Image 1 (tube, rainbow, N blue to C red):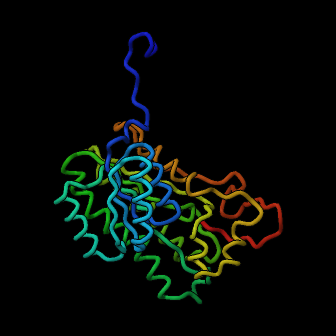
Image 2 (image 1 turned 120 degrees about the vertical axis):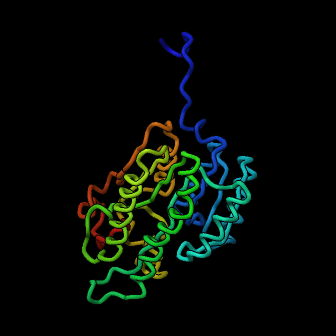
Amino acid sequence: MTPSQGEPSRPDSHSRLRGARVLVTGASAGIGRSSARIFADRGAHLVLLARRLDRLRGLRDELRDRHGVDVRVFGLDVRDRTGVDDLVGKLASENLLPDVLINNAGLSRGLDPLHEGSVQDWEEMIDTNVKGLLYMSRAILPHMVEQDSGHVINVGSIAGHIVYPRGNVYNASKFAVRALTEGMNLDLAGTRVRVSTVDPGLVETEFSRVRFRGDDERAAEVYRGYTPLSPDDVADIIAYVAGTPPHVNIFQTVVYPTDQRSPYVLHRSSSNADEADT
């Protein structure tokens, strides 16, 4: 029997997200900003976090005007555990706790061999990519468990699947994201709280500019000669994962641009240095 013959139509992913509250970390640029836009387009209300509050305010005004959704923005560095706990307490008191948590905030620093690496860079990557994800998840998950619903989506990387030369500590941080996603998923068995990860390959964002500390020329070389993923491409997948029925959990999604088949296999139309943003 088809819906036209009397069977109720099944809600699509867009309608499932309408009215949901979605929290996105690292929402001021890249995949986080694109995620905010696609969730707002699908009728979700938003809590957006980033260090650059001025950018978030502009995005808030854009999304409110365009989609008529409720958007709250807060300046927050996910490395600040006290700040995370205080913010989540504020959200709880104002009935703004999320139905979906997107742990997107992350970064990379440098491409140095381990024996030449910067300890400061290592700490920044580990504190943001691993501990920041832990702080947010630890603060939000008890509320999801209490209401027996919710979804945590971690933005990982193919760097958490295959180690590439000079990736060392960044690779380790993304392997940790993968392991923590698996651990959360197992620990939440028996609840209706879902856990997923979306692991992209090369995406053209501010990632390489951050990795090379504002060296625009070196960052541009990363994306020359092929078509990388866009932040919108990845955000579309995140929204799809979030919009599945409550009994469906897309646990792990690995996505490459067509020109990339692994961190080691990238087809370029010109002979540029093969540095990967993964």
